[in-house]
Length: 141
Picture 1 (cartoon, rainbow, N blue to C red):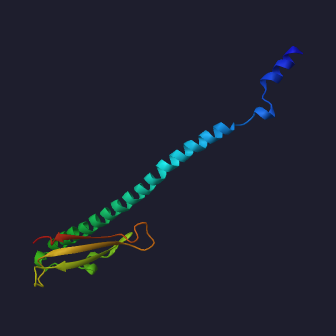
Picture 2 (cartoon, helix red, strand yellow; picture 1 turned 135 degrees about the vertical axis):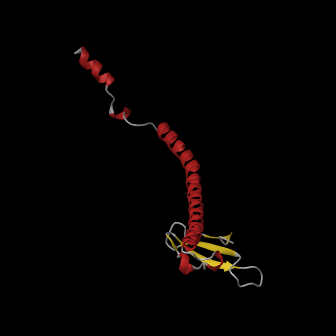
Picture 3 (cartoon, rainbow, N blue to C red; picture 1 turned 90 degrees about the vertical axis):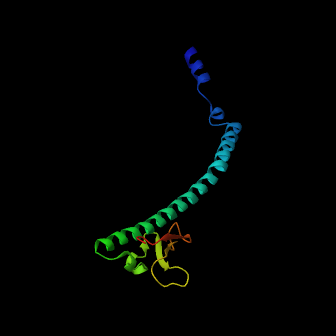
């Protein structure tokens, strides 16, 4: 009978089971602090990812210009005769669209100036409403 009495003392009763109010409040405070620190970092990371994606879109546009230039030179085209346009380079860059304009020296219509590559995020993509324009020297001139 003595062992039965000892077992009752070691088993928790219903009143002793669970967490205390102080423990619950401590956990809520810690979770609140983590949320206050983590949420702004999450949005910061999203913006950084959008900027990196835009950089990749620009790099793809420049790569297309250089690839098209190399292809035309290998086909015996003179660098000054190569035409760069939306049609020749294509406009679909996945989540982006590419548009190309060519400018020559002031007052000139010759193809000896720079290429303006504009990359825009497509509607419905994570990079929607992002736009970036870069001017590069026309390859081969």
